[in-house]
Image 1 (tube, rainbow, N blue to C red):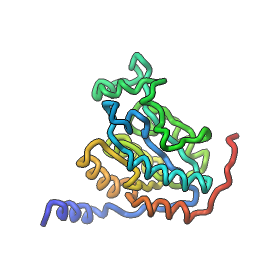
Image 2: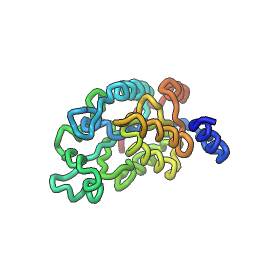
Image 3: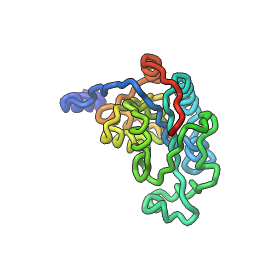
Image 4: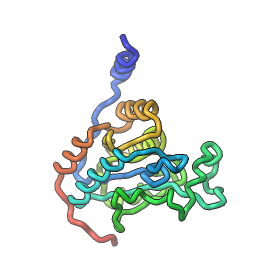
Amino acid sequence: MTHDAQTQAIYQRARFGQAVPRGQNPAVLVVDFSCGFTDPACALGSDLTPEVEATRRLLDVARGRGFLAVFTTIGFEPGLTDGALWVRKAPALAELQLGGRWVEIDPRLGRREDEPVVLKKGASAFFGTNLASILIAQRIDTVILCGATTSGCVRATAIDLLQYGFPTLVPRECVGDRAAGPHEANLFDIHQKYADVVSLAEAIAYLESVPARAATAAG
């Protein structure tokens, strides 16, 4: 038995990898596709052009059907005290200074003014943020998770989405990492334990299968 086959057998015996339910009011959550992660000129960055373009395709479908899109970015004060231990563990995070270009959402995603940006200072999009309040207030029942990095903030967010009770789809074309090994290993594990890893085509088909929503102004 090959290593991959052995791994599959172990996970199947544990009865992992069951499908999550899919609701009628989805949202797209784009984690940390900020310039600091999508531009190789930043120490944290890598060329995620295919992933950004795939996410833009997904976003445009969601927008056309009136579904919520939420973005996250990481940003720290100049003194970095708000970075706590994370900046000491991963010093390149210090480049993500509030007000700087690396914190800005990649413009290729075409973020709209009514699409919230959640500022975070940890790996999970939920840690120390109001993301759960946003999703609950909008009665979101399914999340399509995109962004970077697969092994870091995407994984941490996928775990918390499960723990907060949000069924989650992860289109594999819409998440990226700076190295292939961690990317593939974490996609495998996310699919087994926390979310459904699907194709971009399947995610778009799901969005097109649920009733479109009329845009509503925030109250």
